[in-house]
Length: 287
Image (cartoon, rainbow, N blue to C red; front, side, top):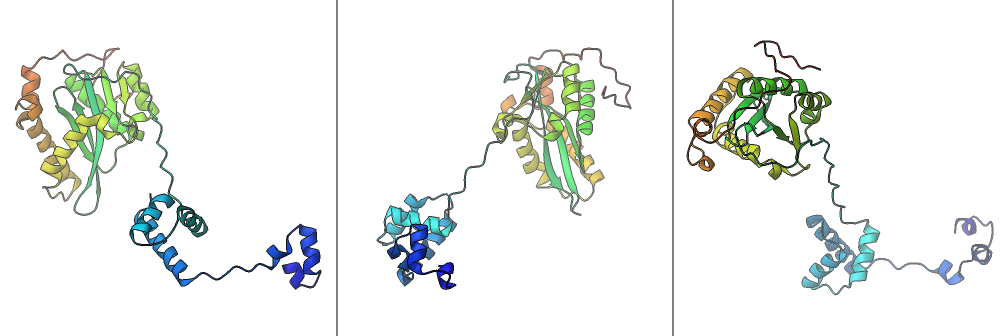
């Protein structure tokens, strides 16, 4: 078309060179009718409201509204408008290397679970809280609030919990960067603690800590006004003590976790191998 309009050759010659039918060259598309414009507008509106609808479902919706359209017609219009169903998000692969099989806690100190829960102080500062829980007794060994918690901080609080309660055989968590860090995995391996990493996007596989977090948010975070980090730490520790020693737990036959741990069947906490040294002040990460 550009060559012919520039006068470089005739239309007949251009069609001969390009092996194009002269009827095709001379064809001019008809302008879109007002009905077609309304149909395209309605089709786009349905696609915006229901982005997972393909051309077949949109055709059914249009027919319900009284439009006389076919499946191929709507398919062609959607393609020309650049509409498509968004592809499903790819499932993230599990990044942490599990060293144990899926295990249900059978006694105290058998399986621990740890995770984070987030909130904020009134002045806008972030609050990130680390939870370490015994899945059998439901005891909360650690509930530490800070502005940010790194893998070294996580490991330090794990060591403190082990010093007080003994070491677990298994440690369950999600695939958070703090839990899959090489220094954490190496330390756990050196001290014979097996890891159980849940599938990404599957919080139900870590149900004990998720249940605790729902109670923690409903009974504390949604009710307290936390102004500073220091105030948050004091009140959160008060909640942890209340949860462990006074709050009745329905799954423990109305007993508190500490009472259940003292009266129920349990196994003596397993010590770390090699012997675990604690000086009461400094934390040796053995890195």
